[in-house]
Structure formats: structure tokens, C-alpha cells
Length: 103
Image (cartoon, rainbow, N blue to C red):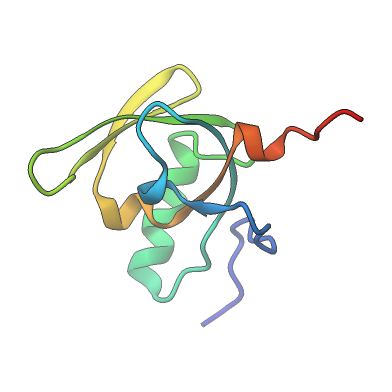
């Protein structure tokens, strides 16, 4: 498979999948996971097109019941419903992990 045109960066220690982000926790998109196949690459391109871009603010608004699927996610000023496997492809860092303590 050819190299991916998607932004893929090394993961900081505080980074996690959007599917793991607690509800109402503010975070920032860091990157998207590398695609494992052509279907996943197409999904990642759609996620980029709808706004899951690096440094974009993101927050999980709610989770489905009982299996926590789908997940209601706000990116920027828009809310989307994502399946957990889709949200797992989006790497985020909670805002408090990004803030540097002042001496």
C-alpha cells in the first residue's frame, strides 16, 4: 500500500483514543491512527473532511446505552455521532494534560 497522506505523528504519553475520553472532558485532536487497509483510509479521510483535524477542540458529549455505542462527539462547534471503532482512530490529548504547570 502507498504511504498515507494523513497526518500521523508520534503519540505523547497523555494521548488516548477519542473512544477512551471521559464524557465532558475537553481535549484537542492530536492525530489520526495510520490506516491498516483501504477501507480504514477512506474512513480517516472522511473524518478529516468533517473536521477532525490536528489542534481542533473536541469533547465527548454522550455515549449510547447500554453498550456506549454510538458516541456523541463535538468537534469545533459541530456535533457528530461516531461508532466506537471510528472514534478509536482519532488520537486526542485532554486539555489539562497539555497545560504546563507554572513554577
